[in-house]
Image 1: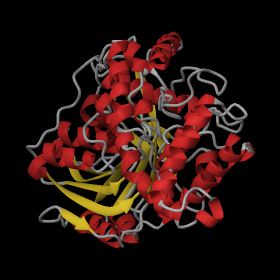
Image 2: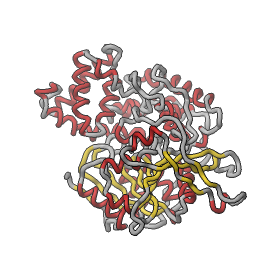
Image 3: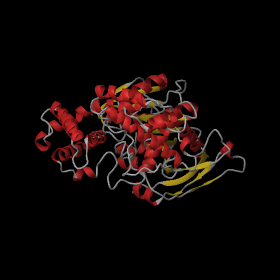
Image 4: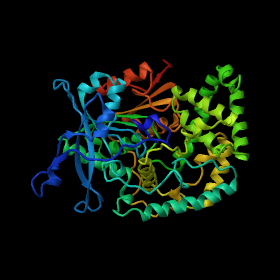
Length: 503
């Protein structure tokens, strides 16, 4: 799922950064790298990163890591990281590493994004805030399967399968996608894009920064990465905040199918909003009428697309725009346009990623999303398994279930998982704060409950009566903000699970 910059967009439309490289590293003495590791030499960030971060000024540098941790003396790849350094040495505790989600979200500008959005200054005093492009992303050995807006695959959410035959037809597409990714993997990086390897990278970065421990703030898929790090390196983890949890250390088929649960739980918020504004948008006078409008319009577009837009476009748009209430007005406008047939405004917002102004870097993000998701765990390979799942979820989650249960390229992925998924380690310090909205499209509340159960007494869960993807800094709940800030700054973990009322 995609956060930081990625958390502001639908899973299909997250935007990555571009090209260029700045900063270098100072290596330790020959033969000493495994003992002491490299030291980062900070320099200016690439121009586009600096422009996006403005007015905040970030520093950037690189850290070498093994391409394949099973062969630590083999080829290296370089990861680019960024830093917003604490200017208060009396209060500085250490480093706070960030991850915006995805997998596939670029995080180089995330420290500045959080600062510009108003993260409490006490947090910035307490930590050097570290952003990064994790392996495979942006400026860190980027991969690309060659996806284009004109091609059959340009979104990481499968299309809605209107019937059983649609699943069978999609199976042929995703098989070709998997083969295409393998053909374009000239540097052999693709099979090494895993959550476990990225967690190992975090520890290499920690060493390069000269820290005994590191704190971590991860959003969406970043919660899987943070959970993996806290499990693999429990004694090197300091204060860990996992916001909008997917429920494990990896995204699997069950996690993808929970997206549809998130739609069902979140849509009533939009339906109430739209019903209160019926005189302006004409989508229904009651929430029930708004819901009926959704199904009526989707079925009409399935039977007779308008200007090339079918029911899948409506469903994907609705999925993406339910991420935040601030997007509800735009979603209502798109529904109006699809009803009337005047689809000019919809064309530039197609959640399938086919907009004319979609950045080429989306190829990189979609490729990383696939590689990490498919490499982390073995997915079912039988088309019949997906056909059955689609039929089940079309009935269970009628708004979006026949999309998220549909077959993925992981069913035909050419690389078997190199290792088992990272197992949650509940034996370690009580240092994991889980933060979760009650209503969230890609990461419904059950994800937080799942991790709370797995981490047991190592964790506490903060449940927030709010709607949307992302809580800390991204939301507007004072209880959640204060609870998380107290933990990051003072280390005050709630004594028990906490419920934050709508604020």
